[in-house]
Length: 433
Image 1: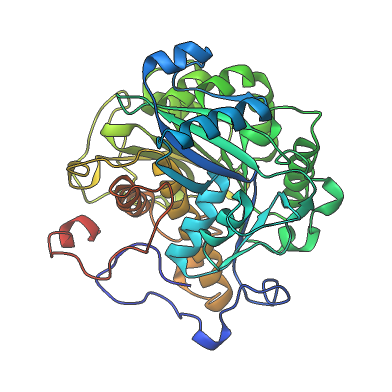
Image 2: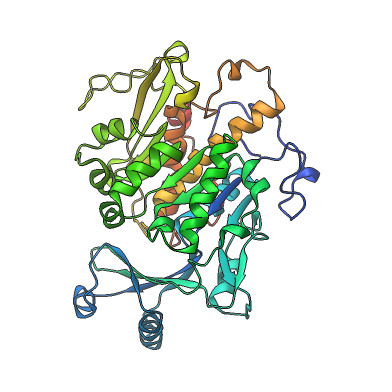
């Protein structure tokens, strides 16, 4: 496993020998191996630039995600393809993107749970999904289904807003009986999405509830990606019940935070969500991102940076603290940090789809690195308490911010490569803590 983020020294803990690395079936669950598991509606994202008139013609609500009939999706796809307007076909899904990015960043395995067409042909959607997913994402445990793979028609408006029309295919057919219990129990984290519990009666919703129960019983952190603001508004009561019962880390953007909490200010929204879970990643677009977490008062660390006041006075006072689960804290305190976009953001933003997934992958990398280090060096001073993260929330915010920048700078919702080993020398102060 690579160390998450950048440091002045090369390694902070032992790195796996190359000959030990493997993501193949039979190796994923070997003793000492560290990986994350993600349960997802497997999708292929099909990007199509459209006009606002096009969205109005089909009565598609701009900026939202919704389900459409498979036949309608196929008709739109073929029409736009014939007109040469399909600009990209990428493996997608919030969880799928995050797993791919995690494996690229960490050089470590992850496991995808979901469904896929059992009759894969060269050039079809399932084939493209597999070909464009990191080889370190283990697909062994996917459930084969007779239906076609799910598709997300991503309509890009002239202002850059993205609207998703989902053609389900077999994406909701994952059976709870198909879950590999032991794989979930021994993982560093279980990643799920609010999309999978949209329909509580669906097979994938039952699988999600079963998976989080398995993780909870095994003390595995559950990480939840919220989806879209419309979904959060629709399922608010369910989510407010689901998160305190099962979730350790919530990832969301400011519109989703508003729908969940009713609070417009992102910092105060993060404070409210920390009443429900242990850690919050809240992306705020051109204003960067916030991280909030719980830590124990005895091990809280004050920042060495200037103190900042927004809606919370000196909110970053303890940003050098590491996150902990509420159950591990004698006297839990809330800690926060905020960071503006790396270098002010890219000069040209080529893609906004997947930036939040990239930031979450960085957070997952740090969570798994903490477990890896605890297994390798259990008597290290880094483990005087049972921390959830290896790094401070301040350092994690820098890492998440940098990874998001990489996705924003490329025309793909997934990382095409890891972060560069060397940059232009301007980042020393940025990464130093």
